[in-house]
Length: 244
Image (tube, rainbow, N blue to C red; front, side, top):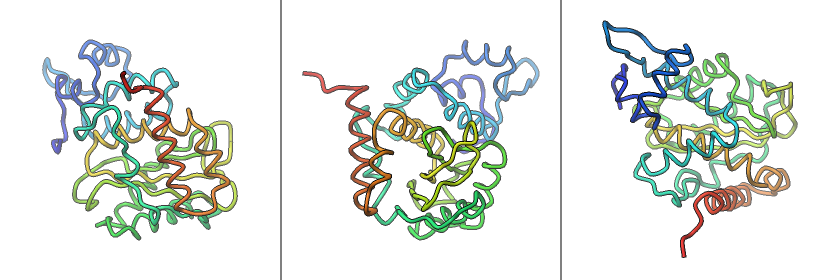
């Protein structure tokens, strides 16, 4: 979806939210919107920022509902499709991230993303991630941050992918309550829907499985990747068990 302005019906399909619920959010001034004559319109870039922030702040029940509604409609994915093996490789993971400050960690993560060979505009990605963190920290509880640029355009990356860094020491990155952060994902997606879906899935893995505890003790990038895949499979099994 390349156009910059969404209609009410387009936004409903994009977010998997009913038009009535969107109208309620508009009435409460809880979603970015404009009035164009009698029609509601929604700037896509503002919606992307709003949706990312809303996902990061969702309670588990809300996150589960979003993931369930978006699963089959994003990138032709089925409920039980594993994303991590498709979007990550062991060389996309740095178990010994050197950064000790927020600014240095961001640069480390963009360097890691660039090392995959999938980034076409490294400086643009760096600026975008910095701007996103200035707007609202992506650090969550449990010591993890889900970095991402505020907009997702095909020209920025060769393909969608994710990188992960584990800092050598805890970093103050803006997590709620001043908590420290050790794990940094950088989500690099060509298309908005897969970005929001992946953001929800990673959030659920971090919240609902023991993946982060195991990642802390992992000895190698390959082991960390295996842990994430197991965590994703556990999360999927919990929410969409195999039917007998």
